[in-house]
Amino acid sequence: MSAKGPKILIIGAGASGIAAAVKLFEHGICNITILEAENRIGGRVCSVEFGGTFVDIGGQWVHGEKGNVVYEMVKDLDLLSPSQLPQDPGMSFFLPDGTAPDKSLSDQLFALAIAVKDDQECARNHGGTFADYFTAEYNQRVQEKFRGNPSALDLANLVAAWFQKFMVLLNPAECWNQLSVTSHYVFQACEGDQMLGWRNRGYKTILDVLTKKIPDASKQLPIESRTILNKEAVQIDWGEAPVKVECSDGSTFKADHVILTASVGVLKASYKHLFRPALPDFKVNSIEGVPLGTVDKILLKFPRKWWPDNVKDISFLWAEEERMELIKELPEGPEVNGRSWLENLFSFIAIDTHPSTLLVWINGPTAKLVELLPDETIIEGCMSMLRKFAGKQFEIPEPDGIIRSRWGNNPHFRGSYAYVSAEMERRQASAEDLAKPLTVNGKPVVLFAGEATHKSRFSTVNGAIETGHREADRIISLYGKTV
View (cartoon, rainbow, N blue to C red):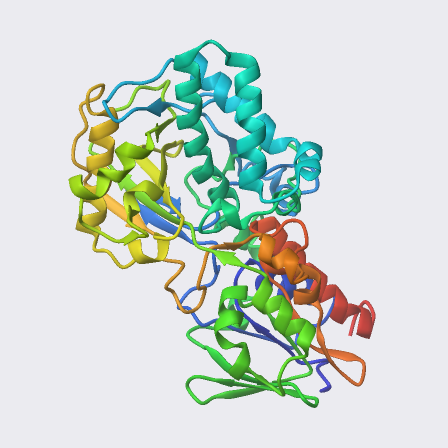
């Protein structure tokens, strides 16, 4: 340790890395350097200009209020607004023939599906995969409520098929058979409004709040000046103190403590050559076992808003035979197991801050492949789907702008966010083991932060920030309140 106090090296300038740096600064530990492999700070908080204001191609909403560290930091700063979209709890479903099913009936089926999803006790008692549980319980409840109503039973099957895509948006597996009846319930949401937006500023605003630039720029902490961009760590030698970190450009850094905030996807791809000496078995098991899924965003900007105010989304319902015809109708783009990438488009959603823009998520087994497509193919596929399902009801113009994420193929992320899978549970991998530090003589020398290391709020920005605070506290406890 130098006269300036312990030397801290933080790898990654995302929400968790910046949160850790800020907390250390606030406790007098200021000998800090942050290495960031990208050419910007923020990590999976990524707000980009689109149509004159900012949109988020990473984290977008503040999910919940009670116990949410993000909400607590900004609640008195007039930065958030609740969604102005219709509060209708259902979805705006459309059919392949361009018609819409009975809204009252589809709302009832959607509510029933949500009730089955949220019935944790019933799921645990059922056992098996979540897909098995949901299918059996949903069908039973549908039969009880709609027996003797053939049209309702037919629509129920379509809603159930759509719900599969919903589940792999919440838990970004490639298919819902990878989820157990317990894995979905590990995540613990914060109570309160789940869709608090940042108006036209984007989620990047939280970085300014963390570093104290907001609300008073004169009190901003020197986090960015301690951050070196385009610095990719390729070797962490942790066998003895100080820890030595080598970067891809040949530069090296030494530190008493390293806080590593790389995504678990990056760790999966690199741990065998990144760490010297090799990692202990428990750490390898957690890295290999904690999954990171890919969900990407596609935002289409239109010359005008063509959907009515009472439509907050355009969601597709279709039968199996109609899905099989899709590859013949629209052969451009990837397919997996004979299924088109267009099946994995999940709901076109209106955005409060951009009245002429629709957001659609792409998930499932084709998500990473879709990232490789040119914009023209993406636009053609999206427009074909919109016109097929909604073109009879609305006059839909060609979009005049597109922006999209590519989290899966970016070597500095290799995915979007973590979830809990049946395989993770089977091999007893855990976020807790992923978070355990590497120690030398009982002292933590390599510490792990990031959303995947949070045991119950993985996949969220607030979860990531909490893990940065957790690892900063681990270091602070070694040296006392101030250094």
